[in-house]
Image 1 (cartoon, one colour):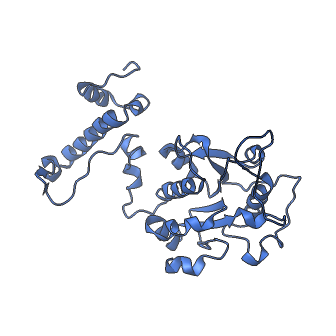
Image 2 (cartoon, one colour):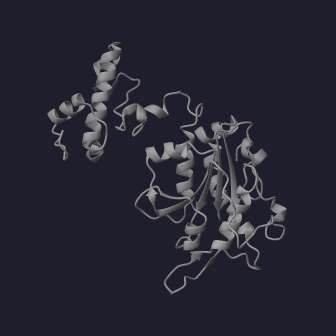
Image 3 (tube, one colour):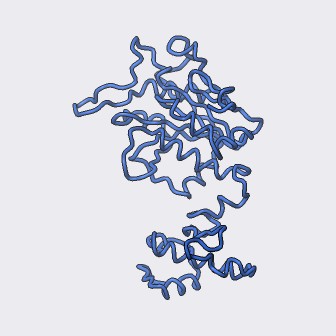
Length: 299
């Protein structure tokens, strides 16, 4: 574990990284907080935490159970295989945390027995500029547009599912959004939460070494939603394949045009369906048609 997390990572899995003015705070609710230790200790997310650009707190849902065996799941009504996550521990955990300032987490000695006051029968008021997101394969797809939307919030509560998913009342009474990272099923929402934290953090000013890096990624506004074209670095020739001459020409207008055309061709080759909805210029459309594009819509 890094020195940074050694200093701030408590036994409950909370990372106390409260900055003076963080761009965004993540509250992650999970049954397995230790899964996050290594991802939060490396690379861009680590630097963003260290520089107080973001803050993250991990909350163990099980800490908010009050029954003897600290059970967070049960068999489904109506029968069927698997187990379903119970609503009470999840809702209690999320509402208790969001009722307090960003960065707060339950002290480890208070787990199970000395929980904050909570009203079971009355829903708590959600803080402003806060989203409560269920990570579930039933959610809307995570795209760069959705990432940019989430980046506008000051606080994101990410709730990681397990087993056969959430009791439906978690969806109806707590969640403001449901998001999926793809049309497949994982063992839990933890990996999806890590993906979301990484994607949103990249948009925080100062998180990347190059200020326009996130703006010029695939699917980003700087590329008009296109895929990024090929990139090259030293050596000039590798296994007989040289760098395209235009990139060493020093003619910036030609380089920009070549890169844009490469983005168009790469998108056509790999994700042609994207071209149907992107704001292409007349020149873009003419260029693509010379390379075999046949748009489904007129134009």
